[in-house]
Image (cartoon, rainbow, N blue to C red; front, top):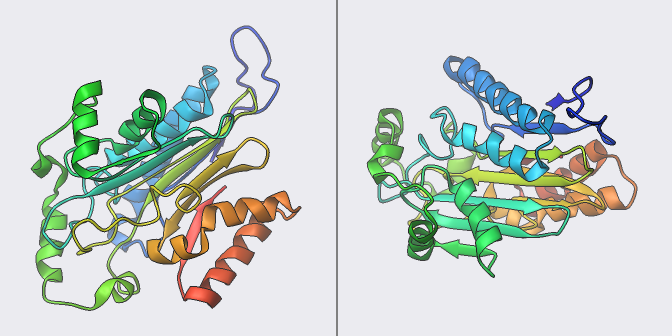
Length: 283
């Protein structure tokens, strides 16, 4: 978490103190990866904070933060994402602008290093909210969003983990509750104009079915932003999050007068009771 106290815009004191909150996922971080993950989140937050210091928008800040996490192989987003049942990377992402409620999302993209940037392009350059799979890749080509060879997103660590995982066939729920990592990333921000935004990006869960889409790119599930209430980015078991529309549910509780922490705690308890799922959020 970073704020901009003592860092006014060059020509004026900001009317609102900007803030950015970044998360690297709700998962049991192995001891050997804890430092890399902490440093990755810090780097992402600092980069986004600089955007806000310069007077950038909340949308600019969350995209900057999530791009940094997508570029960091310590996280399940962009390069270093987990592999699906076919041994491939499939990526999902969403962005949302709380000022206008504009949103963009992509799912099942395979050779995009920064799906969060492609999601923003969907929001700003199409009349749609979500593009998926081949259509998303064709759109990326048409607007100049950089593509990479699919193998460039696969790390040696994830290839080894995927091969080891082929020994098991325990289903999505069991996979989430195992020791294997699950670490969707995201960010929320408030800029000096009082606007909020959210962004969420993920490679999903290891050994998922080809074409599986989780909560991350679904508005109201993996993220939501509304200037009248706030912004949320979620992480956790996607199927459970979708069943309770976690992001929008959290903001509804805040709108009803609960504090952010109370809203999150109540919604996570509800999700655990109703669908036996686990998750976390930044807001």
